[in-house]
Each structure stands twice: as structure tokens, then as C-alpha cells.
Length: 350
Image 1 (cartoon, one colour):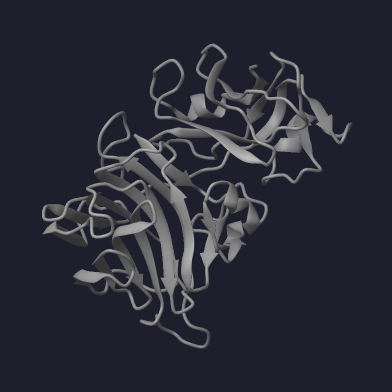
Image 2 (cartoon, rainbow, N blue to C red):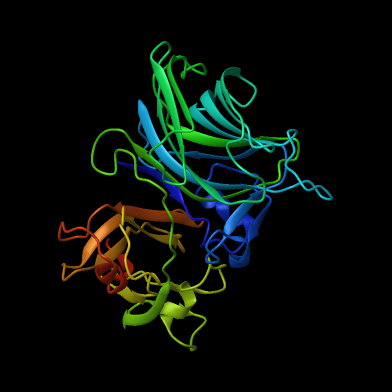
């Protein structure tokens, strides 16, 4: 079951990250030229303390969490090697309490900690990564006081670089689960991050090891149906107002009429073949004026009916409506063709 994901591709500024992360102290957005695949964006964490905290979108307490994250440790200015004084931790939280952590140190060492970044050390693994190189890490954490386990893999390999069993992975609250993550840093950490994905060890797929995951951004590139009013008026069409990085209030589409809907075609994946774990469709929405409306993120894919994949009542500030689909609306596995030909949009449901 999908818990949380962020490609960091859709933000137009660091402040936009706050619409998905409850704590946002990220340093900067990195352009495509600074990413692993030279597409989309990544994010930098060049400071100390809590960098970001995000709750699972399901709001659930998870006894087992699988995940993947892409990391790059930069060198110290003027140096030709990594630096042990820089650390970046992926902390698994129950509320605000760190249960256990994976800690990446600038010299290539990985630590597993009980609690947060400065918690009790459970294991030390040296020479795991080289500085100034993008690597993808896959992990599985089982939360327990005495029967907890942590496994870390690298770049899609099934051979672990770290395996711990029968350890305390719930040191923060004493509860045998997590419901959020935090990214914490020490030493003015020069780490860069991308392609974050978390899933449960139970429930609907995905619910196990997924290998080296890459997030690919799609944006609206054409109008299929236009019923919302554009702001500003004129221009290339509604899709152009919502088809770039997250927009400011000066460019948007809007409607207060129940049943009205915009649908857009999407940019292609740019891949000919891919094993697709799922597609996360979302819209950034807010309420204008008094009263209440329910908005829906709509999808037509693989010949399906017009399907609501996420809905909610927006507040007076911009927020995210999102729906993760491990299969297409007909129940078939996603293919590059069905992803590329899908139509997505926004609708006033009530």
C-alpha cells in the first residue's frame, strides 16, 4: 500500500514543499542538470537540524515499511573526498518520536540507529557509497522492541549492504509502528535527495521490495475538455496555466459550477519500456470565496470511464489532492502506452 512519495519535480520554489511536508527546511531546488537522470528536479539539504517531516498520506500506523530514496553526498568545498562531519538521517517516526533511523555519513559510512540521528548505534557499515555520486537505496524496517529488523539495499541489488535482526526499532514511543518520516542532518550536511517512495508491508500492492525506483514527471500539454474559467484570460489554453511547476495564485483555472470539468492530455514518459509500480495523480487546489465545494481529480485511462481518483473539500489555502493507482482504472497493469495516453483533470463534484 502506497504511503508517501515525492519526486520534488513539481515545485516552483522551496516554500511550495510545505504543501506536502509538515516541516520544510529544505535548502533549495536543483535543476534537471543536477539530477541523476538530467530530468525533473531534486532537492538539497545543506543545513543542520530537521530538514523535513511528512506524515504518511494514509494516516495509518505501519508495523513494516518498505521504501526507496535517491541520495548524493557532495564534497566539502576545496576537498577531493567525502567528510565524516556531515550526516543525513532518514528517521522513522511515531508522531514526533523517532523510532529508528538510517544515517548516511559523508565519508560513505551508513549507521543504523535506535531512535533519531543521535540515538543508540545498532550497526556500522563503512564504504557503502562514494561522494558526489547519485545512488538509490531500498530499505525495509520492521518495528519492534526486541524483534525489530532493518535491511538496506543499494541501486536495486537484492544483496543487502546492511542487515540487522532482533534489535530495538521502536525506541521513540514504544509503539510497534511508524506513521511519518523525518529527514534530519548534522554538520551543515551537503546532501541532495530525490525519488522518495514509501509503502506498507501489508495491504494492497505495492507491499514489498520494488528495486531501484525512478519518478518521472508528467504535466498537462493539451486540452481535451475545457469548462473551467482561466485566469488570466486568453493565452494558449487552460492546460498551459496548470501545466508547469506549481503555480502561484496569478495563474489558475476555476469553477463554482457542480459538474464542470477540465481534462488534459499529458506529456509522455520519455521511456519505451518500464516496469510501472504505480501512478500518483494530483492537483493543487484551494477554495475561493464563501461556502464549500468538493473537488475531484479525474482520470480516463485505457478506455476507462471518467474516474474520480481523489476528492476533497479544499480550504482557503493551496493544498494537494492526490490518488495513487498501482493499476489503471480498468484493473489492468500500467504500460507506457496507457500512461502516455491517459487524460487527467479537475472537476467540481458538489
